[in-house]
Image (cartoon, rainbow, N blue to C red; front, side, top):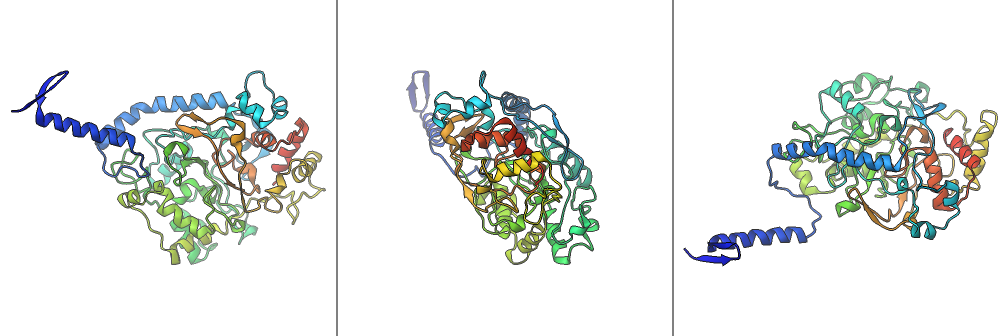
Length: 467
């Protein structure tokens, strides 16, 4: 048998060529970037689950250390300010931590260039990484996982990570449901999470048969990247999948998170703060950056692509649900289009405050909103959106850096989300980096160079809580 001499001794020539081939493939895999996920796995599912489960404590510690470094995560409810269902208090106060020795006033007096050169941009204003950014995928709050398991026996637990934000900083659960077609009924959810198990009894006699079928589809589990039957899932047992209303619970949001599917490579993908579906009837763009033009487009896109990280090969492997455009997407969209904003009793028919019902602080906040703060440039009444996209150019304030697997750099244009009912939808901005309305005011005070004083900031928050 022919031998080949190496510095480590002699080996068979055939073995040498095999090693050379394996090494070459490994180097090629390391060097070549790909837009695609691996289709054929090289490791048994049980082994993958074992090492990911073992790594989970360290993964979550790394993320929670980051959050505690960035934010004050304490439970500080605002006095006498509840979300629209009356079951949960709105959290108050600026939660983003400042660099040592810095104040918001000092920071606001600086130019973007000064803040960047001195590395003073608050850590809580950087893009927020996913709980495990290199892995990504849908992650649900524990309260929703427990409710779906109780109602349906379907388990949305991931063995590799949990949602990172504390429950008190998330939206009310279950959220109320208001319908544009039956405003006389108020909250039609009856305080329940709408699922396959109860949608018919809750809505029969309120929705027409076409809408009922659309709602059925919105609460039907379909395979998704992390929750499916294949051996590259992230649930212990094979899963029937997720529903539209697992993220957009009751047509609103539970602050579940995901990574957008339309950016590569992985470190540039944005964490996604799940938006509310309330008021989609007045919106003309869908998706924080995708700029889809109809709710039918959005519904079809989510099922075909976003569920599977924008990879149709993986979608086929895992069991994509191809929504039929002529009926199914239309039925689902029709239900979404009648989900209304919560009541705002202090607003008149023009979306402005009724002076007889509003406090002095709220009225002053409205004046600032439409004046000095220039909020209404992008968020005009009555629904407080211009249905456009805007680039805040946040990258003016910092140098790009890697944060827990997320490359913090330019965000690009972001959709103007409606501010109606905004107190019901924490956290804020497209990736959830802003935990409270106070954080949001401080962020835009810097972004826009407004130089608002403390009282003006408080009044602005008071006004937004009335919307």
